[in-house]
Image (cartoon, rainbow, N blue to C red; front, top):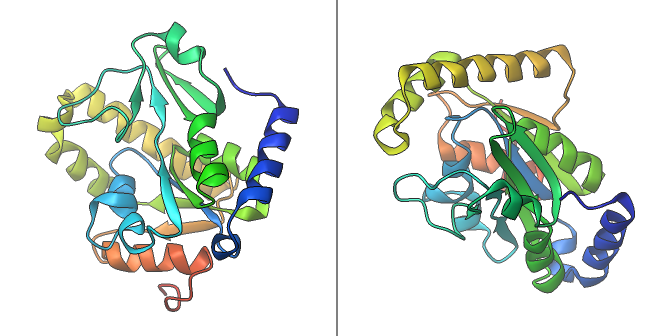
Length: 227
């Protein structure tokens, strides 16, 4: 259940009133990109990920979904897994998206935003799709940097194929993801969605370099952006 505009306004006021001074200068971060673009690696899996180098300022917002866990995924760490559409929709979300004819649902939980920004006084790092990033940007405005990982299609195809053992996806499912990725890249290229940072993330850019640029744009003076 998506919360109403007045509830969002109240939540933002609570965030403003409870954010510690040490975090006020930094912006929330929404990392978006096609499936296989490397969002999780940049946020917390890589040794130089955002959550490893800035854990005193940022915390990761764990999204909710009604899909089944994949191999090695942990409830409360990778996602909050809800057993049904009804149980998913009974929760409060700042933003949510429906996929595959409403069979798969994903969303940003209000409880996670409250946990991180209100109770801990930290900034939030979101891992969402491009629609989620667009929605979060409309909510947080200048207080959030909306990042799109622009990964070449051949690289995406290779990554999706390599992780097949983990996801169990078929060739047809991978091809659907590739088609979706092409559509996302086209929307950005046409200006239908305008991220704050379109980050070319191919094999010539290391995870450390990518994280450095994202954090630079979020207010950390770690060095100049990648040229």
